[in-house]
Image 1: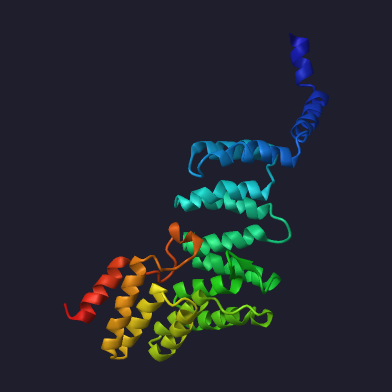
Image 2: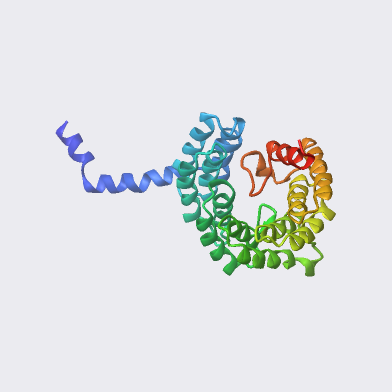
Length: 278
């Protein structure tokens, strides 16, 4: 028995074990691990099922430095509003990311839209914009999300400048400004009480998306503050109708998080009643 114990604590044996265990893990290829623990494991369950996380944990035993696995582990937690826990895993994804900074851009998006950490989002976005001035995440430029974060920090002048950069970023490639960019440009003027200029951008946004109720709402308020009450009432009624038909912000992640200045049913109802004199 003593001989057995002695052999187990022998430094040479310990070194051999340390060398052998990683090789055992590496006997499976990355694809095989993905197939086993993702395709045939986690992805057979809802993101929110405990089995999903258990399969990710198993895969990470074999690939502890795999950025994608860390991101997949983090993602459902953000959709469950468990931001602090999710960010712990997403930070690991960023730490193990490749040179293209895809996880850093995802983290910047999460900080902006989900976590509402606008200063943190801007810090990540500044790094990204320096490396990839025309970089895109979730269908919008990095500059757009920086501007959105600035709006939420009441930095309207800076947001205006960045939104104008974003709207012009791909024009030379024949890609027109997105209606959401134009909407938020209008917001930067609305918040500074420059209602005429705000309406100009709201109208540009509505040319692309004529039933965009959020845009109609803020246009109606701008008209009201310009003492154009009959026009405001007409527009707010259209906004209410379109909103009830589902014509609001179209971003996929709106199902999990409200976007800045996204309207609610009660907001429309209050203004319809006010403008109707009820």
